[in-house]
Amino acid sequence: MHDSKLPRTNIDELARLNQSRPVKVLAVTGGKGGVGKTTISTNLAISIASTGRDVMLVDADLGLANVDVVLGLHTRFHLGHVISGDCRLEDAIVTGPHGLQIVPAASGVKRMANLTVAEHAGLIRAFSDLYHRVDVLVIDTAAGLHDSVVTFTQAAHHVLVVVCDEPASITDAYALIKVLSREHGVQRFQILANQTRRHGEGPDLFNKIQRVCDRFLNVSLEFAGSVPFDDYLRRAVQRQTAVVEAYPGSISSVALKNLALKADKWSVPQGARGHLEFFVERMVGARIAPTTVLQ
Ligand SMILES: Nc1ncnc2c1ncn2[C@@H]1O[C@H](COP(=O)(O)OP(=O)(O)OP(=O)(O)O)[C@@H](O)[C@H]1O
Ligand SMILES: [Mg+2]
Image 1 (cartoon, rainbow, N blue to C red):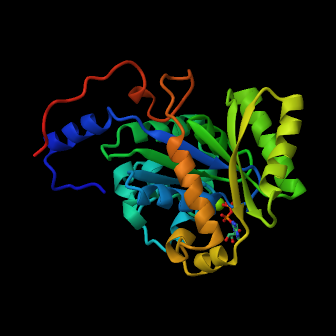
Image 2: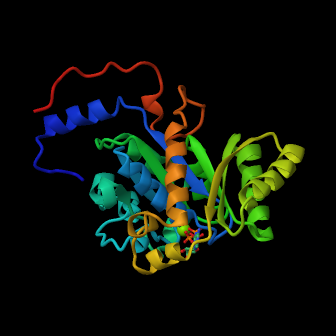
């Protein structure tokens, strides 16, 4: 959180120091509404944070926000205020479990769902200017194929597509992969099966999607794993807590923590890919690490 007591020179120094660190950016998406994007991104972010990493979770569901609701957080500012210039990005950050830094989205603000391309780009650049220390940035995207989904997903390093074993989810996930690959140059996807109800359902679902993608698209898919359907997860939602916190031994928690361990091994790209992306200036060329020690 922004500490206004820090002298400006130290803030600048801190910014320079942190801006020389690579950040891994994961976008959690899925095409269809209600498949579990917010559940997965929230629990994944908390699980990674619990291993000691500095994690930031961005609620980029610009139409209908809910990370703050899921975690029972009280927020004063959100991304809407950042875009309208009413506050800086650092002012909107609230702290969740394990020091997780959360950027809430605007709830039910219509204009937020219809941002211009320049506003999206401005938002993504605002992250580069943060002086906060971040190892992993997790983005919870909206359902569907809004511009915001495309921009945020394209700007991420890893795209996690959440799918359930139902025709609408599979078709929407395919449509999302198709648009992102054909029109926006996103070629690699991690497929996560959510709400699985039997052993082997996740790999079967993955194979189904891979078969159709192999036939019609030029993409590379990886199976990120399965998160079983779990009543404890629903109970946690009712209590406004994350399942990995409320019921750490539950089947969904175990799966989510395994996903976090896996995601921790995903690499950060070495070079810029030629389109709008998060923290791009941290990858371009060699930066000279500052030698000043902060007081
Ligand atoms: N593995 C699971 N087991 C049981 N319930 C689940 C599981 N995953 C998600 N849910 C439930 O499904 C509902 C939708 O989940 P969530 O809000 O995470 O979906 P979403 O994809 O973010 O939806 P939206 O598109 O509206 O943003 C929630 O009530 C959540 O508790
Ligand atoms: Mg959601």
